Length: 246
Ligand code: IPE
Ligand code: IPE
Ligand code: MG
Image (cartoon, rainbow, N blue to C red; front, side, top):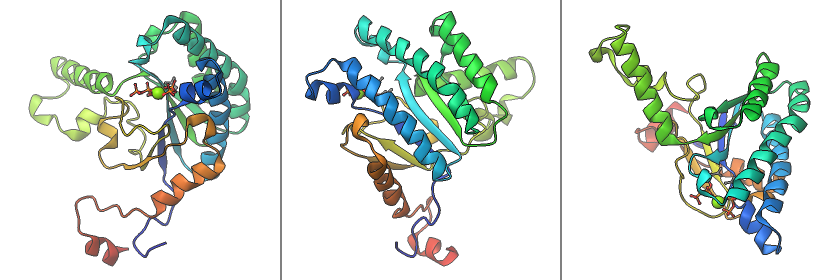
């Protein structure tokens, strides 16, 4: 570790869990096999980051663009989503985790929405790591939604146009009660954000790896943390300034 690197683990980690389909196809299996395996890895990943002392873990589970996939894949993903919540809610609750969902949940079936509400309600008062699940989430949607909320407050006379600042704006965004992510991880080899948290990633450290999501094991997770520890976060300052202030 260098003198100016990050001594502590990130408080907020966000992950684009990509590569399930390719992992399955490599094994000559249907894409859904990769998604099922992906859920198991997700469970272990939650464990890993909770143990590492992370306060917030935000996982991209389904993007607003993923509706464009073949109908049977979308339907398999919805079934898997429901089954995973039924299977893991109690266990994660017992471990003291708080589970929250970000994204446009109205697009999901009534049953799935009820399960989402139930999972949130059961775990709401828990003191442990907050697990944010991004489902039918899009960064553009998030920003437009925040703009709409702000416009409504102006129309209602709660604030004036001159009072609009970054803080007022970001109060209407998803994850407004969490610090912005410190570390962004994307598995699966692509070097892009794919409409994940756009505003919130302004000063996040990016880590891309080629490992496909179902192969993302504890060793790979640790490599991501190790890479984070090597980064110097300058926020516009010079490296020398950061070294002096520690
Ligand atoms: C990520 O894996 C899971 C979801 C988007 C739901 P993919 O399904 O995108 O896997 P690849 O990228 O096709 O391999
Ligand atoms: C991003 O992965 C969304 C999730 C992991 C849920 P995609 O596989 O959908 O991203 P693109 O389309 O390759 O950018
Ligand atoms: Mg993909």
